[in-house]
Amino acid sequence: MPSPDELHDLLRKNWGFSTFRPLQEKIVTSILEGRDTCVIMPTGGGKSLCYQLPALVQNRTTIVISPLIALMQDQAAQLEQMGIPAAVLNSALPGPQQSKVMGRAREGAYRLLYLSPERLARPDTKTWLESVPIGFFAIDEAHCISEWGHEFRPEYRQLSSLRANFPDRPIAAFTASATQRVRHDILAQLQLRNPARYIASFYRSNLRYCVRECDSTSQWTLLVSALRSYAGHSVIVYAPTIARVEETVDRLAEEDIPAIPYHGKMDTDTRRRNQERWTSDETRVLVGTIAFGLGINKSSVRAVIHLALPKSLEQYYQEAGRAGRDGAPADCVLLWQKKDAGLLGYFIEQIADAAEKERAWQRYHNIRDFVDSTTCRHRRICGHFGETTKWTSCPACDTCGHAPAWLDQVQPLTIERGRKPRRIRLAVPPELVPRRALPQFADPDDELREFLRQWRREIAQLEKIPAYIVMHDSSLEEICHLPPKSMADLMEITGFGERKTERYGPQLLAALEQFLQGARAHADETRKEHPAEETLRLLAQGSSFDEIARLRNRRVATVISLVADLVERGSVELHPEWVTQDHRTQIEAAAHRLGHDRLRPIKESLPSEITWEEIRLIVAHLRRALQKAG
Image (cartoon, rainbow, N blue to C red; front, side, top):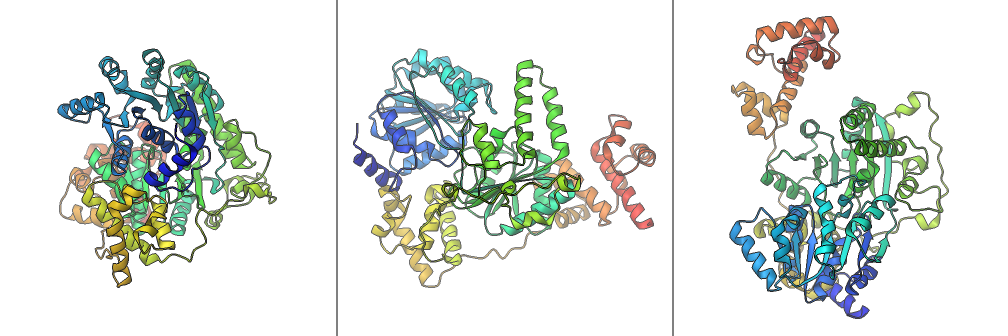
């Protein structure tokens, strides 16, 4: 068992950190003592180090169970760069490579070995693992094991066999978002024996929570205002569907706000490339479904904006918590519409299992209580996770009187409906005032920041690794505040341990010297076509909707929706070949009878073979005709 000084030396040498974050040292010590351990620590609290450091100390192999292949691969690559032997075993590896990893694991070649829960459930995996010198098991995203959790995954239930199959091996469970009920379920399912329990506070002092009920028009106005106010900073926008993701990215392009999409229907290479473009600051705004986020290692996200009501408060807390992981102020904004609640209720009613339906309704009521509440949002979140607070107001939420200026551009719907405005509380307990994340150095040079970001991107592309593995955002910011002049200076930068300094130090110092000599980041001089311009050009060339969708990497429905907008604006005429004459006649008759404002009544009155896309195109044409006549 290493002494506290030895643990600090390992932390500095390998991770480049001078001190542990709250609870980390206690958790590391507990695991090294061979105790079962349960850790509840918010996103960005440093959970991975809590099992990686004990794995480094022990002369055995730590088995890490994680649900995400991309996250496992990134963590293994990062550890390898630090000189810590690590590997991933999953179905994506070719057969010979899987055999090689399994053979090396038997020899004890790895300090950490990452497996998916599906892999662990295979009968042959148990037999093979019995030949591996295992130190302990680390279960990441442990809330997935509980049916009461917001992300229950049946394959996680099979982890309960770990205790029976490996009774003498300790188990450490980690999660960022678990209520008291879920925590108890984790302990029971994993059969943890007298576990050490570490629960960090759910209060994130640097995050400002703001909620606004909108209609579709005000939501768009607020989103554009928000993104312009965060210009030059990294932002995540969560949209509820793939269609909304693509539509939002295209509409933002028309507003000259570059953004990239991310959703589960993309091919793996495109999805990973888009994620990398965002993490390396090539594009600052990412619009994604909930498929985006787990394992994202970007600390300098200045805002997370939701465009729909999440399914649960746990989901919202986890997704919003991806903002401000560097400790600097960040905004978590929820712009929801009344129809979101109806849609959630509709899907809950489709659940066949009575118990699961009850749990889903409970989650629904919790998130509705949160958005409708007039009490401190930080306090409500803490209370939801079982944390009792002595304070009743905070310096960082809208209900306590602290909201960004851009949010006031649109009058709240709650006030328009005659509700009383929320009461503003300004008395803030001193212990809640956020601390600055960085020392008070001189303001960093924006040109240096961009130069280093470009340098980091180029290194990452050459080595085919994520940019954050080369250098974390927090390290980059610290270098911008106080540029190092020597390798010794660089070792003082957070995140630069011995191996990273040896690997990148000479190149980084050379880049800083080039900057002093006048080198600057290369400006992107190419002007990209707006989606509407590109679509109009392709239509003029005779491209079909299918061809445009393929060329623009969009779904056909998204392309047709954009074309319908262009028709309504008068930018393009309706082509007869887009909709058959028979369908056009039926749609026009239904629209004249039911009105042009809403598409659903028209759709419900027509035969099923007439598609939403055809209706959008014809109704757009009719609306344009009415505009011209009026």
